[in-house]
Length: 225
Image (cartoon, rainbow, N blue to C red):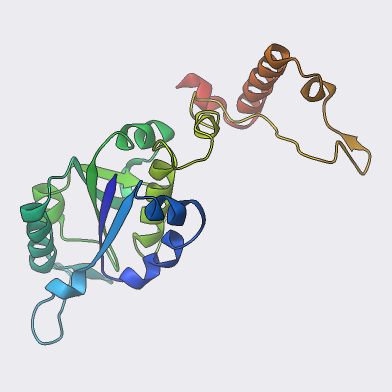
């Protein structure tokens, strides 16, 4: 899968993609991540990409012309299954959305900065608007890293054990059950006997029961969904 990401501050995205699982996935050609600097399409001698809001108010807005030119340039070379804008006022990014996106071939991700992007770009180009939570960050770089990570780990071969992603929280509208590793006795706190029994069916039933209890206690809204 290929992720093309348009950013006003591309250096903010380097570290999340240079380590651990995503780095290995890139090296194995399972995913491709291209970060495009919006400044390359800026206007005038200073490559301007933002300006003040019409109507007044604090905060600069990403101008439509450089962003439009950047998107058009990319669309002339590539076919996108989705053009995504990361924004606090988008729909909530959920596991079901990550599952769907992981089946696509190529997506374009637009990142806002400052006060956001000109509304006309959203109307003209964006096909999906996503939020990672009900709060505001300085830009879309961190949300984009979250999106790419959540989607990439679902792509076959990215994780060493494909079943790992399928048993994560939210895959079945349930939170994941508690997990344990060695030692079996840690400061008097012991691993549940069922997990040491070797009975796969009983362990599976126990994990489902624990997931259900945890979800009812912490996130009952998931069961309503």
